[in-house]
Length: 231
Image (cartoon, rainbow, N blue to C red; front, side, top):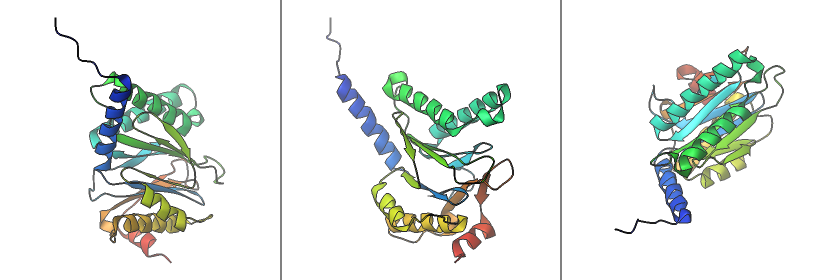
C-alpha cells in the first residue's frame, strides 16, 4: 500500500498564508481615514460598477480588497446577517463589532481548511455614532486568516501597506473635514504609487454621522471633483 502524502500542519498554514497574501497583493490597496464626523474609504478603482465599498446597515460600512467574487460573497452574507438581527431584535443591536466577529470566524474557518483554498481577501468594517454625531468611530480590519485588528485614525489594507501607512501618518491630523480626509487619502495613494491618481480612477465613499438614519455616502462626478479641489 502506498504511503499517504504528509505535510506538516505548520508548513500547510504557511503555504496557505503565502498563497492568500500573494493573491491580495495583485490587487490595488484601499485606505480609510477617520475625520471629524465619520470615515472615508478611498481606493484606485476604474470600474464604475464593481465596487470595493458599500453600505452594510444604517451606521455600518464595508470595504474590501482582493478577489472580487470572494469578498462580494462576504459582503452579501454580512447584509443578510445584519438584516436578520435588526428584524429579530432592534436596529441598534446591529454593530460593526458583531459583524467583524462573524467575518473573522468565517474567514478563520475557511483558512484552517474548510475550503480547498483560503480566501484572498482583506476586509474592513466601520461604524460611526448613530445618534449624537460626536466622534465614536470604529474600524475593524479582518485579515484572510480571520485575524481581527481594532484600528484607529487610519488604516491601509491590501498589497504593500507600509508606504501607505507612512504616508497617512505624515498627513493625518485631528479634526479633519470630510474633503480634507479624502485629499489625505488620495495624496497617500499617489505617493505610494509614484504617480498622480486622477478622480476618474478613484472610488470614494464613507460614513457621515451627521446624515439622517443611513450614514453611507458615495462621492462621484462633480461632487468628487469639488472635494478633491477644496482648499
